[in-house]
View 1 (tube, helix red, strand yellow):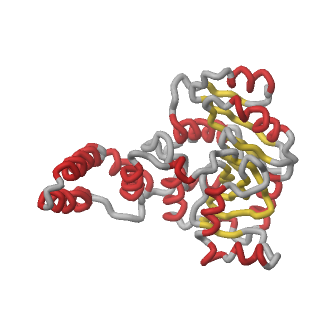
View 2: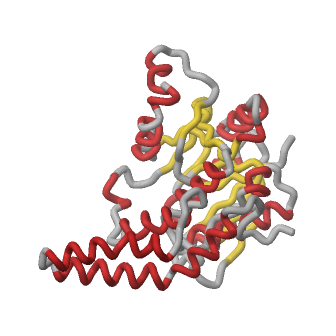
Length: 307
């Protein structure tokens, strides 16, 4: 049987700890669990280590963010000989057969080497409905995979392809770690999974959704929860980091300077100032983006120390 490691990054996880870790304990597939704690203050560290001694617990001295902390867990799992790496949010849990059904899809897939990410079906905390974000990912892919039509006709297939699914529940085969690597430390929290999927696509790997495998993600069911003051900035940085898209100082100027000139000519001085400040910020990040982009374009275990 392949060795499967579950990596969970925690930060004040007490609300979900019992359901989360008990579900791993009752999985029909034996699971090695690695927790990287980002400096919790709610006592969840003691609760986890005392009640789930099978968990390999790593205490970070500071909040590393989602990506860096996951990379630490992935490195440990890799060195422990894992064949599969299951990234799971702290506000999530499995059912007894969730992992087995994911592994079955991988085992029976005709082109295993093309699989980048395997995803189960995400239910919300009620366990009655699909998570609204996951449902949106499915809906925007229906023109290609006809998943909803297959449900309507009671002819659901074993797996479907999608262009994105968030990292609340990701099963990564070892090949993905070897060829894509870990999360880009450029992002502290949010957007790490979008940037990772860009690399999955760049290297022509696929995201596979497995309808037979159900899991729970007890996240807030509100599309507005992801609204950020700097949402446009993050989206722009994702685009700049995309290995499939060219990036240079001239492109950076074209991104901002025409808008600044237009805003000045129309006497929108406040908008022009904000755009100029954003241009200055992105210019200050230019070298970091270019350096990171060079790493991303090369196949290998990017951002991981697994040699």
